[in-house]
Length: 209
Image (cartoon, rainbow, N blue to C red; front, side, top):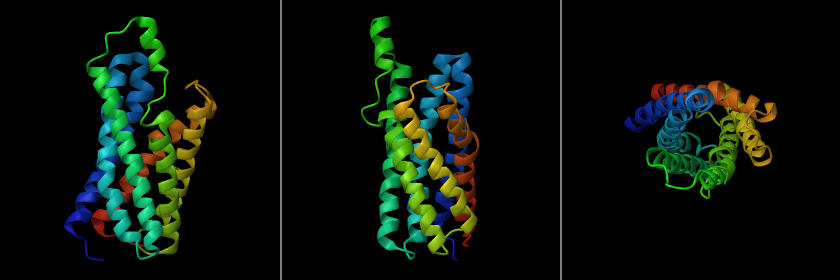
């Protein structure tokens, strides 16, 4: 398969997205516990970057998989963009508040911190919709030859983890609960970065099934 300039651009963005997701996990899970303000700022920044960087790879994935089923590939692209932009907007909102915290009484500020984001409530777009998009991509990879089949298996695992994280965040408010913490750690530190890094290399090299 001939590798286009956009394939290489999307591949580079996917690799950078994988790095940003890993850095987000470090900031959110590790740094935020020792330095909450710094951790909040960095996690917001990396969430914003990962969302923006994910948009070219989703576009390239659509181009690779549309021959397997054009409408399903288009649906996956729409869901993938929604998840990516949801993450970017959520990260941008948190970053704006981290850089310039609103002047509110402590009790009111603490209460507002527990209110779900209106754009991305409990990670509906970042995790739920992105998980659905990844599941559709995994299914399409199994039907066509646009991407390595093993990458599709990894996509199934990632999709499952993302949906589990969304449901857990929706129903379990304690971030230390193992039912929420375990999939967050597995997805944030391993599966999600691995998916984007592998996807980036496949796009850069023009690798197929």
